[in-house]
Amino acid sequence: MKSLNNYLFGLVIATFCSMPGWAADKEPTSVAAAQQRELIYCAGYMTHEEREAFRTRVRAARTPEEKAAVRQAHQEEMRARLTERGIDPVECEPQFQRERLRLRQRGGKP
Image (cartoon, rainbow, N blue to C red; front, side, top):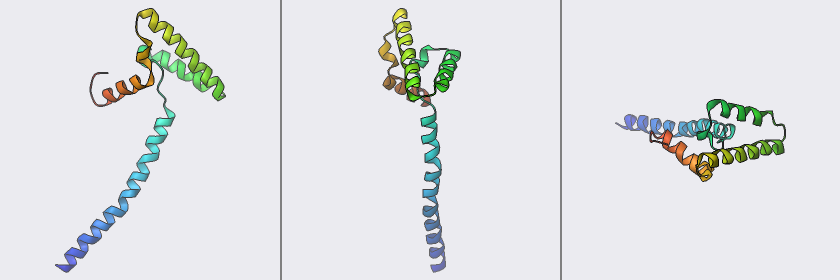
């Protein structure tokens, strides 16, 4: 009986010692993925080709200032397009995009 208790105790200790390794392995991947892919302003109102063209323009910009200028021009263009269609541009703000993305990931309607 005592050897069984020692075996179980050793098994529990080994399990707990290996758990931090699992968490450490998974965390950097999710952080790197989040940093690598940003939300595109009004992506829901763009075609796939338009989103890819925007990503290409941002990647082609060399300095952070150039990237910011590309993003700013894109936002102005999308605001004008949405206003023309009669859609409130507030729907494209990041908090609304994140909420729609969360709903979509959970299986709800965006």
